[in-house]
Image (cartoon, rainbow over all chains, first blue to last red; front, side):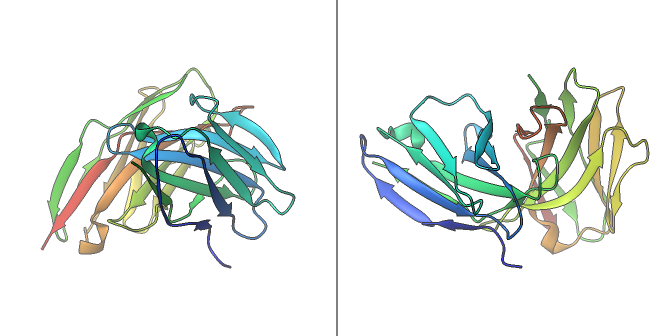
Length: 113
Length: 116
């Protein structure tokens, strides 16, 4: 099976812009979780989607949003970008909920200038 | 809220030796899952080992084993016969099994270097 794919892999934006990141889970996986990874804050949970519904959300401002489509593909959107949003954004899929093993994608590295 | 603490930011070990990475967590949940993930330099994060809290037996996967002490809320990872390919950042993670099942909490990571 193909692994988790994320597009784009690299992105450069300027403050105030918005960005949409995409994640395609492993075929058959229904849960997609998003994480922000930074050197200072480590890995922080953004949100989890299961069967097109957001099941959990981390402590991030409303500028961070996401959705999941019927084919389990997920997108996350960050509006009004700030310098502090520069990070590696990781997507992980699991068969059911995230207490199952999560399979991570390669990440999207976002740089906000 | 759950917290996961990895008290060793960096560790090193000689090839073929054994190393133990520490992880402690805090939770009021009675049932949950614990994980060790490995993130090699510039490569994808992959699962190393998984432990269900209701299982008393410690999980093992080839050279990797855990020492799970539920009462002490401790979940250490032992790597035996260390190999150069084990060089990576290792993350300990916690996931509850209730309605917050998807809300995983990760530790800050331990960078392990295996020296030839």
